[in-house]
Length: 264
Image: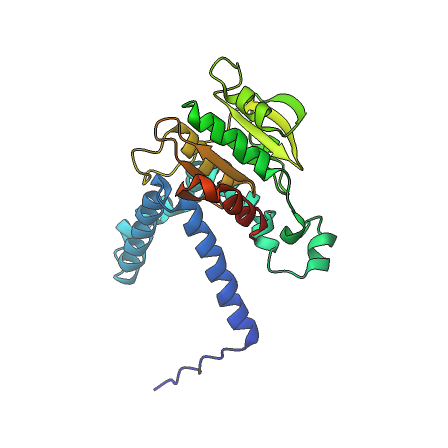
């Protein structure tokens, strides 16, 4: 009887397992709640059937499934194009670097979140509260390290100081920019009227409209924070890292914005 060699599990093997687990977890985060996860499970089922058929030496069926899997890599690149793009964006996202030392974050061009400070959240909150009283909706992108311009389109440069009056003026229904998103960076309104990429998730509640889906989309593809004021319900929501926190009380809006901006 041939003895099987004992499984050697050294530090490099443990690291290998942890890296693969981290990659799979990030892929799961990107595909969670989307049609892509169903496609992935279907491909996995075909692969498992192929392994079983090959083990049973069913040559013809194994040959057919083998050819299907052989060209399936190209098909997967096409089907998962959006998810792969998000995964590559995630690699350069500050969320992937947040566990590194402060000096290393600075070396890689990322300023630590603790240095973000206050950039006029009181003025933003006052402006949004006035919008809420007037029955207006709003979508605001708070830029961090990644530039939202890389994924947004049709924005108009504003470059104005952040004041409550400016926030109301941008989202008034008479404004030509009210349907799009406004971007705030370092206490200034950089642009407005931008069209954001919407999330591909299909598990969102029906009450989440286009603004909420766009907020999730920009937070999935960049490290920006997206703030939503619902025109229908008048409630506030914050999207960060592909997660949406809803029903934020107006009195706690400033604190929640500061927490989201300081979080890694």
